[in-house]
Image (cartoon, rainbow over all chains, first blue to last red; front, top):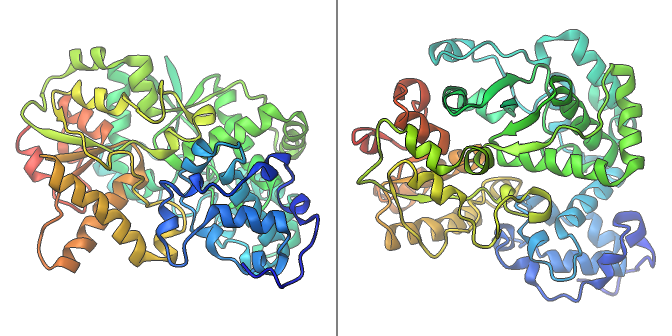
Length: 167
Length: 294
């Protein structure tokens, strides 16, 4: 953690505006059982909380570790101070995505285009063989897919990055 | 009882035999499944929940509106879908402004959401709604003589106040009792509650460390149990716990890691007498050692 760099006093309000965050006393219970804490670099949830509280903007913008989270939410269960660390990780990702378009996950473009992150319902031969019915997917329903896209177009991430979505 | 089946993406796209197992078994146990036409991504935590609240909750709201229109709760197998839908609903139920915003976004699509439909995990429906005793009474082919271990889906345990249904998330019992109901012996081991590590960005960002992390779990299974199989109830656990074993074998240069992995509904389907070719045919770790003994 580089404390020499400039810090922004109220950055936490822009990222994770909850008083509970300030109850974090760096006990590290959030690391116990966290798979991504074994990564390289490790996801150290308590350090992220500290960076948010201290307002280390540049360091936080460049931090990839929130994206290594597996979403198991064990930290959320174990945190003795109710910081809700998993919600904090999502909030940091949201703030990064809003301030750096290269952080916007490509998967949302897939969801916009076909409703899912991958091709659902196209394995018709295999489904047939297994005795499964045809799936009524949104990918194959142009009217519903259009409604879905128009709804998403009104949300911050899609409207701010509309060039990614072909319009 | 009627439940709306939320399939997510991995199950229908990559492991439709799990879908077949769910569709085959639940009606036998008194649960009629209704399809979720035009559902969309849950949304996955790495997608809209990582960009902004509006797109996250609008997508959750789109899905929840489908169950509400059918007048029943969702039943979900995928851990991530279950947790994402639960958390999305929770946000809306506890924040009237968020619920109002979602309905504003949904309005032009002809949909509404009130939160009247809940989101239930398939293992919770089996454990709490149907119960191990009822399941045991339906078994035609028992797993007697086989040893198994269970992998609890993290997304059904934590945070317990949002997703939980066990008396204690730190000492869950459901999966164990469900597998025991099929006649198998469930062995305990030191890393039973360790996450499989397969979801999110861990495997993608630092695969070396993610595989080492999984290895600690598999070594504990091999050293401490007589497991003939692993029972999971999450599509990510299923795929990851198979794939990791193959990767580990390549590293050690021998077939050391070869424990078959089954979704619980697949084991249930086999015990209810359904055809293995339909309900348990897709795997990356051979299941023959178990199938030949049922």
